[in-house]
Length: 233
Image (tube, rainbow, N blue to C red; front, side, top):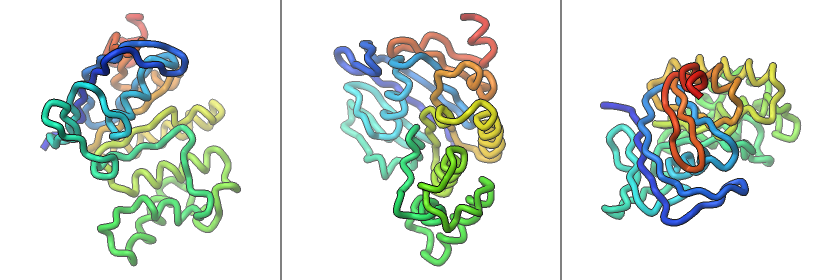
């Protein structure tokens, strides 16, 4: 079965995002591996993530994942966010301040996993992200890079069918962002799922993106290999 994530979405009238006004009309096929959405603030990148995750309902369109329909405006299908099998890591990370690192990652483990096994799975992901030492510490004591690793561990522990990342490295310095982006790439290559990463940083898009979708004002301008997309601009 294909693990492709497909989106067609349109909103009637203008949308306002980051102070920009645009008419949103997008169609995308996002295959397994890392897919980068690139464009300036207000171009519609986060709108795409919100539609895919089920946080925003377009006027028209359809969303499918691995040939499973998540949304179809014509048929009245609109699966709730928690039934889509899609993990979304926000720019703010949204870690629970009252839970330690292990508790935050355990929260992402599917409820179908026996309680006795959730802790082991969460600890395994903390190890993979090289932050096992944060298992008993709370988010207020995490560095920016540590918090990002815990947020990614929680998302991946949920065994998502697709992973959505909204500006995941924007709060980190250039060296740490490069280190984490390389690590993310290694994890993604080992998993046959679509990963959609939003950025407005061209250096990061070039570093990460095998496939880059360039957006402007709610529409797709170009899609292709990262270097080709930027050289043709």
